[in-house]
Image (cartoon, rainbow over all chains, first blue to last red):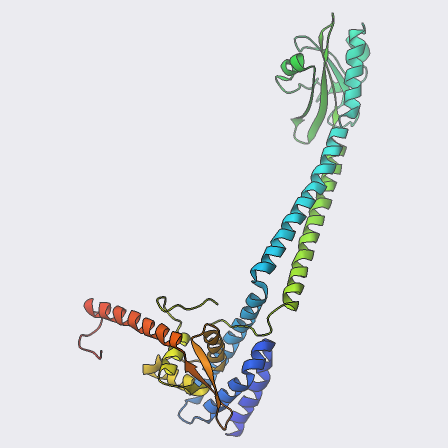
Amino acid sequence: MSAASSQVAWLYERALRLYPRPFQDRYAEPMSRALRDALADRSLPRPKFFRVLLRDFFTSLVKEHFAMLRETYSRPALIFNALVLAGISTVLALALYVIPQQVLRTGADDPQIQLATDAAARIENGAVPPEVAKGNVDITRSLAPFVIVYNDRGQVLASTAQFHGQTPAPPAGIFDYVRTHGEERVTWQPERGVRIASVIERVNGSHAGFVLAGRSLREVQARIDHVQNLAGLTWLGMLGMILLGSLAFGWMTRRKTVATAV
Amino acid sequence: MGMVDPPHGPLTPSVFAILLALAEGDKHGYAIMKEARTPQGGGVEMGPGTLYGTLDRLMRDGLVEETGVTDDERRRYYRLKGRGRAVIAAELERLRNALEQGRALGLLAHGGRS
């Protein structure tokens, strides 16, 4: 073998170390032997063979690494375990979001419940609407609770709420529901970015009507958004840990002899 | 990589050339590469990486086996198993049918080697 061929063989033998270890262990020696046989074959056109050798080296290198990864990580048990853990993590993350979200949202009604029931009781005991609804709350800016008193036909008698200079209108049909059920709790949005948590109480007696107590959900919504971000980050963190754990476990329990792709 | 069943095809050029080369008799790595390069062997240019990657898969699928014999140059020899012979026979049959269709369509001259 010429000096140039010896150098090619020497270089090829070192390059074989780039193949996955199990493949190297099995085939580095016969591959090297086959190359030496090819280099010793005088009938083989050199430039063409070197082109084939170079292309073959890189394509088979990529194939063998992909084959090793596929063999290592495409085991049904490994994928099944990872999917089950991902499913559990998703349920936990959802619970981590839904439970605090519900607690925050339902808790946001507490001041309005107290205001509405107190105001309804006062009117039933003879108080006039302007006494019950005193003050001025700009619902687009203020977080303070407000009160609106309606007569039995749903017309405004007194209001502390201001929405662009007017009393905000609650969702249609709400009074019919309260007339039969006594109370309703509803979230409504007079305009984009303004969400109101409101409680509507029925006023009985000689001054029959309705009392609506509401307040902006802006701060509560910010807390819910924060909880959502934390739950989302927790979910991504858990998925990341499952991925890393599955990769590590797959690698530790891989077959020592790896089959190859064609 | 899945198993290659005799009724299914087509085979990749490397698999086809290796099985065809080994159908002639037991061969070592470079002898397979050399046979595969010839027109009658499939005309497939392959290097050692493709050869041994493919042989590994074929051995796993039970189409080829190592003979266990090494010569004085420490070359390993490979032989076709019964299942490998059935696979290459099925592939040749598939190609023969395609060839006949090609002739019937006038794409190939009649009266060639058969």
